[in-house]
Structures are given as C-alpha cells and as structure tokens.
Image 1 (cartoon, one colour):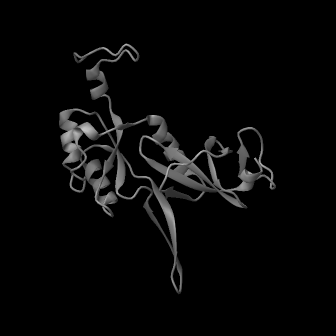
Image 2 (spheres, one colour):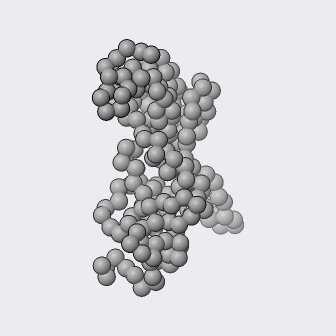
Image 3 (tube, one colour):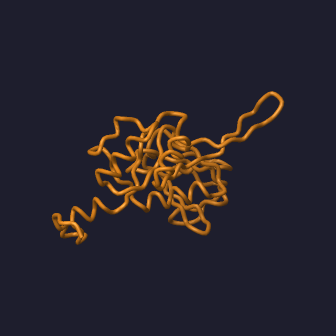
Amino acid sequence: MGCGVLDSISGETSADVTERPRWLLLAVRLNRERKVADGLQAKGFEVFLPMYAVRRQWSDRQKTYYAPLFPGYLLCRFALTLTNTTLALSTIGVLPRERVGKLQPIPDSDIELLRRITASQYPVECCDALPQKSEIVEIAGDVTIRGVLVDRGAVCRVAIGFNAMGHTVALRVPLDDLKRVEGPLTPHWSLNAL
C-alpha cells in the first residue's frame, strides 16, 4: 500500500486514488478516433468509443455507417500514475492540450449509463448543450433510463446530460415507450399545458 494522505470520507489514501484505474475523457484528432482507440488498446488500455448509426441518402441508395458519438473524444481507463499518463498521452492522435492536471475522472455510473444508451434499440445522437430544466421522463425497459423531454411528438427526443464530460446525448423514443416520473404520458400531454 502506498503512503499518502488519508481521505476521511472514503478511507483511501491519495496514493490509492492515483493507483486505482479511472475513466478519463481524452481529446483526440478529429476523424482519428478509431485509430487512436486501436493505438491505446495496443498499449494495454481499456477504451470505450461510443458509436451511433448514421443514415445517409444517396441518389440511388441509402447507406448506414457508424460514427463516434462524441467527435474528437474517446474514453480511456487507466490509473493516474506518471507512467500510465505519459504512455496514454503520448499515443499518436491524442491532443497535446490534455495535460495531467486537466484530466478529470468520469464516474463509472456515467460510463455504464452511456453503454446502456448506445446499446438500446433507440436512435441516439450527440447534442450541443446540456438539457435545460424541463419534464423528466423515464424510458421503460430492462434498465430504466431517465432523461429530460426536449421535443414531444409521436417520436420524442429525450436528452441525457453527462456533466463530467460536458456532453449531452439525445434518444429518439416513441411516445408510448415514455412515462413521466409522476405517471404515464398520454397523447394529449404537453409541456405547454403544465
């Protein structure tokens, strides 16, 4: 066990916190997310690159491909030791502005929620802003996902904000699959009526 200052709340020393692997959001070169992820994995790091389906209509066909949910970013899990940090940040494609002092750990609960969202049956997209205060809804399923109702219609947009990452994800969910936290939604329900 390393010697360090004891945290009275968690009971961990500062050395324990540094040695425990944490998820970190790394800025990478745009359109190089997959190659950087491969490079980090080759070095032995655990990497999570959330992807979403993009459909493009051409004159003669429709094409579907997968793109990074957060362009220019990926999630990497490692202990914040000098060796690991230097090894991760020296990977080709990781932007140099990410310095040791600026790396902020991402809670494991956010990563788990993001994994559930990207694995869901609903179309997902990245949004520019964190959701404003609005009606909170739940998406029923094996695991309940809560979010903020942004647009209402036959298919609604539900935004889920990730404060630690500074990004928001929106799911397109049929109205029938949503329910307000206080009770089920009805077809006549709207934010303007509240």
